[in-house]
Structures are given as structure tokens and as C-alpha cells.
Image (tube, rainbow over the protein chains, first blue to last red):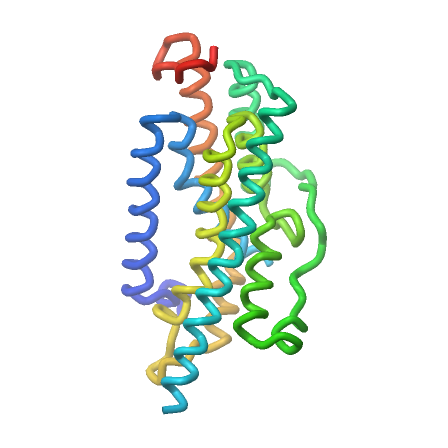
Amino acid sequence: MHPRRMASPRLVTISGGLLMGVVLVAVAAARFEPILAVLPAAAIFGWTQVGGL
Amino acid sequence: MQVAQDRRRWVRAVLAYTFGGLASAILVGAVLGTSGRIVGTPRDASILWFIAVVSLLCAAREARWLTFDVPQRHVQTEPRWAMEFGIVPGAAMWGFHIGLGVATRVSFSGFWVVVLTILVLREPLHGALLMSTYWLGRAMPVVIAPLGLAAANGHVRPERLQELYGRKDIWRRMQVSGLLWWCAVTAAVAAGYTGAILPVPSGTR
């Protein structure tokens, strides 16, 4: 299988949508605590753990 | 009928896994935030600059420019729980175990940057939010893999999963991106403590 065709467009769309959701939460949370702008990075850290196993 | 039953059982197992991990992640985040408050970890520009530097060093590690070990237990969760207790309770137990963060393997350094930041924030609610966001990111591949990697009959082909999970170069690049973002945010907030960029949260000077 060609690596570029591993993930379907639906997977990419859903992943992108989830990340956008986290970004929106981060923007809202950062109004109260600026450091919480790191929330999307926290989600990415969790996501990538599965790739390190 | 059998396919529908299998699908329902899969949905229940995934929900149990996700909420099991969410429970332990919220608990760990709240405990870390409370610990920071009890210990009285300093919250000033210098500690935030320290976190920014640590993030940068971790990004260099994931980019293979530096080499150092990160604290971790070299174990995975217990596969026998599903056989002993059933797939759904077993999935909940797996989720709770893995959601603790420190009980199983930590492949990349970003997790410890999250922990360090929670200790500095000294706020249980923010700690719970950060750790639960980390967990939800970790649980998402389990939830969405069938959506994008399924064959025409709806089953996920194991070789496709292995191929995707084996692409460590992709995961490392994502870690580097996240760590650079973390460095930029903490540096910006640290600079804000001097009034340069962002407003200072009340009660933190």
C-alpha cells in the first residue's frame, strides 16, 4: 500500500474536525488562563503516544 | 444480527475505554494541580521560561538532535483483564490504567511537559482539563481508526493499522510541532509577566 493513501479522506476530515474543536476550547479557556492555549498540543501529545508503542 | 451485536459491543467497549481513561486523567490532573498548590511551586516568569526551554529541549529530542531518556515504566496494560472480566469491563480497566499516564509506557516527552505545566499552574481544574485533553487525544485513534481504515466489509485490516502506527516519523514530527507550540505559548506568557505581550492573570505576580 502506498503510504500516502493509508488514511481515507473521512479519517482526515474527522481528525481535522476534532483538532479544530480542541482549538476552539483552547481559545475559550485561554481567556481565563493564557497558558491553556497549549490544549491542542496536549491533544497531539496524547494522539502520538499510540505511534510510539 | 451478529454484525449488529458485534458493532454494539464494540461501541460499548470503546465508550468504556474512553470514559475509564477520562476518569483517571481527571483524577491525575486534579491531584497534580493540587500538589503544585500545596508545594507552592513558583509561578513567575522564570519558571515559565524554564518550561519553554524544557519544551524546546524535548522538541530537539523528538527531532533526534538530542538523546536522553524520559521517565517511564516499560510495561503495557494487562491484556488478561478482558478475558477475566469481559470485554467491556476490561476495556474500562484498560482505559483507567492507561489514563493514569505514569502506569504504562511513555514513548514521547510531551507527556512530562504537560505534567510540569500542571504543577506550575497550581490549579486542579486546569490540571484536570489539560490531562483529560491529553487522554482524549490518546483515545481518539481507538475510536476513529475503524472509520478511516476499514475495508469494504467494515472490518479494520490489522496490517493497515500496523502500517500507520509504525510510521514513527509522522508521530515524531507531530510531537515536535506540539512541543514548539508549547514553547511559544509559555514563552509568550512569560514575556507577558513583564507586560510585554499578554496580560498577566490576576493574583499570579
